[in-house]
Length: 165
Ligand SMILES: NC(=O)c1ccc[n+]([C@@H]2O[C@H](COP(=O)([O-])OP(=O)(O)OC[C@H]3O[C@@H](n4cnc5c(N)ncnc54)[C@H](OP(=O)(O)O)[C@@H]3O)[C@@H](O)[C@H]2O)c1
Image (tube, rainbow, N blue to C red; front, side, top):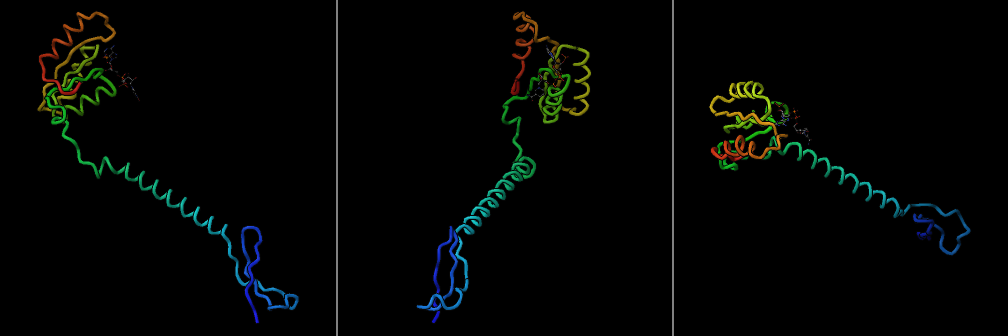
């Protein structure tokens, strides 16, 4: 008659087969290996894979969201007014903002130091957005004179229905 015996070796438990009552007769035969550490490795592996899959899906979602999933907001409705004021608008970021806002139907006030650059940018934007009004204000923001600021900026902007500043 044969029985199965479990012997603990470290963390893994081999299941062996011996002859009942006569352990010295014949060599115990290994029939299986019960290994908790193997289960731990499997659980850790699957958890890591699940986490990686989650991060990948999140990254894809974040990339696709603005272009595919989100619905565009109506900026004019959010602003609640028709005019946008853009400082530093003859170059770089300011110029791009002014152009995009004009394309979205905002009338735009361009503010920078150089009047000839302001006129060039005004013409450039007007070509791309024909149905909007564009005003320019030549002003140097390093000018510390508050009266100048009130006269040339505040007074002019107060005449307009400004929604984006
Ligand atoms: N946070 C970020 O990641 C990041 C990235 C890029 C830029 N920025 C910052 O964003 C700002 C704009 O960057 P940009 O690359 O578009 O700069 P830019 O190309 O140099 O344009 C600057 C604009 O500001 C005007 N300007 C400069 N000094 C002025 C003053 N004293 N008064 C009135 N207007 C003045 C210039 O026109 P005129 O010469 O005709 O006056 C020009 O239209 C900078 O302050 C930059 O440091 C931030």
